[in-house]
Structure formats: structure tokens, C-alpha cells
Image 1 (cartoon, rainbow, N blue to C red):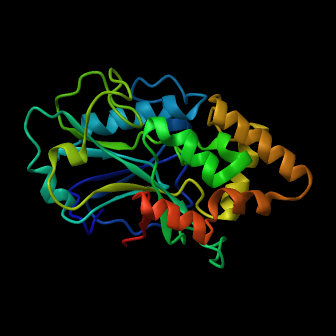
Image 2: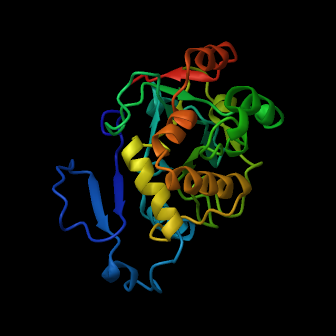
Length: 273
């Protein structure tokens, strides 16, 4: 983001950041979301779940930002595209926020699965009505965890214009909007595409920790959607037999045939950075 030309960066760390040794540029601010943070400035304590936490954090950053736009995203996501900052200046004044579509990190057979952020390719979500068909063709009996051709969210992230959104902002769009609202980047910007490169699985090792944490309750992510519950049940069944790697490969490692299918329909993206 520094290389792209970001004027301000707010880096919110969930917990105390005293142990971190980060070399941040002068215009980046690290905020420790520890007990002191959650008990100050009128806050009433740390929310018990992650989404309410994101809403509070993103809204606070939005009210503090001095730049024309704020991008709100998570640490496992990189919003990337050539000319991204310059293109923001061309967006019509009436557009309050612009949405960026996601792609999800996956691997090819033979690639190292345990180096964080090493996946070389990304798959894109399908259109709403083709998700089940594509997922059934590609993933067989595991299609139920691919509602739109990917495992993670398909709602993307947003750039929010400063000073025009009163309701506050959430992980994907303003708090008074829904997933069906808003304009997408390609609707208002001509030029190179911008995408959210989402590492839903940062690595196989990190994926195991994440799923195990969701099962034992140590992670605050609430998994209540049908495909999320199906994923947890599937992981429990495989982990009881020591087959977590087999499940990971079925979900995140694409065969040559799967890659060719996705590429034919414009649903496979090579890592551009």
C-alpha cells in the first residue's frame, strides 16, 4: 500500500502489539486493540465476535482519515491493481463507495503449501446462479462448501469516500447498505482491474490452526451460514482420522483440469505481484 501511494495507514492489531517489531513508514500508525483500548474513549469493551469488532474499528478509522478515500480490509487480504490510486480520482462525485471483487488463494500440485502467502494462483467467485453447477463439476461431494465457487466471502471490499457516510462502515460496505447495493470498480473505472487477493488459507499450517480455533471457540469468528457449518463438520470428520492434509488438498489445490476449466471461464487469476 505504501508503494501504491497510500497517504495514511491505520494498522489495528487485535490485542497488545508491544511484542511486535515493525518498521512502519512515518504515515502509518499501529493501534493496539488491547484492554486499555477497549475501555477508553467511550468504548464499552471488546465485542465477543469478530464482525462487530470490525465494524467498530473500520468506522473509527473512517472518521479519522484525512485522505479522500479509505480502504478497509483485513491482514489476510491485499487489494491490488495497477494505477489504483490514480483511478480513484476519476470516480464520479456522487459515488460514496466503490466495491472491489475478491479472488481466493489456491495452489497447484507440487507447490509448497506451508510457506505463508505463497500461493501462485487465485480463483474468482462465480455469478450467483452458476455457483452450484460450477462447484459440483469441480469439487464433487465437497461442493457444499463452495456456494459461489470459492470458500471465503464473495462480497469483496470497498473504498469509502471520506466524510459522506454517516452510518459507519463494515467489512464489506456501509452499515446501512446490503450486499446488493453499491457499484463495483469495473462499473465506474476504465483501465486495469483491481481485485481483493484474499488468502483465506494463508498456508496449510495456518489453515489448520484457524479451523481448529473455530471448532474449540478460541477464535471469535461466528460460523453460522450453511456452508460454514458444513466446512466445520467436514474438518472435524477428517481431523479425527488424521486426514487434514487430504482435505486441504481437495479444497485448495487445483488439478490441471480444474485450472483449465476455471481459466476458460475467466475464473482463474495468476498472482500479479
